[in-house]
Length: 219
Image 1 (cartoon, rainbow, N blue to C red):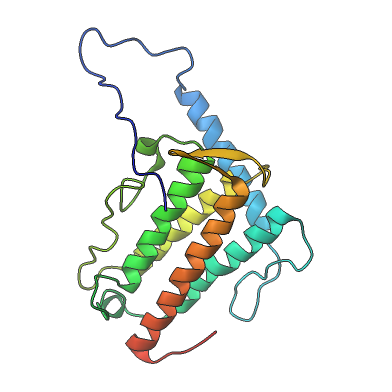
Image 2: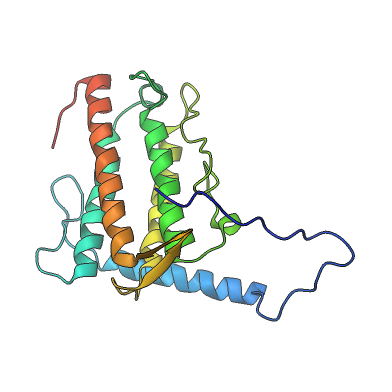
């Protein structure tokens, strides 16, 4: 779920192109923002609670709204990795359904969904600066174009990188804060609830795919 339209960026070419405005970020601003994101991400990870028997951080049973929502989302993010652990690249790229859905494709898709909602929407990062791996934000996705034997480990590493940045974007945010998501106005609360739903749905799909691939079953 996301916006379906983005304004075209201005044409940078031509002798009459306007000079950069004073508000345009310089390299120092970008570096400062990046450092702040990294520090916020580290703080968020250190605040995570104890893990269950599978290494997944348990959602806090008594916490405020933001910590509760983030706790469940982190539990589900860890569930994604747990569901596919031990699958070979060949298994993870195999098409077990009538569609192009694969284990690796789902993990890739989740990585760019994280980037869209937490970088582009929550962080207000311009789409061209987000660093999408498999898509152009809400545009066409290459996540499902999985070659035989494509690396599952690479997809998981990309997903982990995306989720680390997502945690940093939430540092200091209030659940009621309003955000512009394309033509919609949503709150941070809405984004977190949506990502809990999105990640849980795909975790269920991975559960079925993994059982079809090697017979494993689990929670």
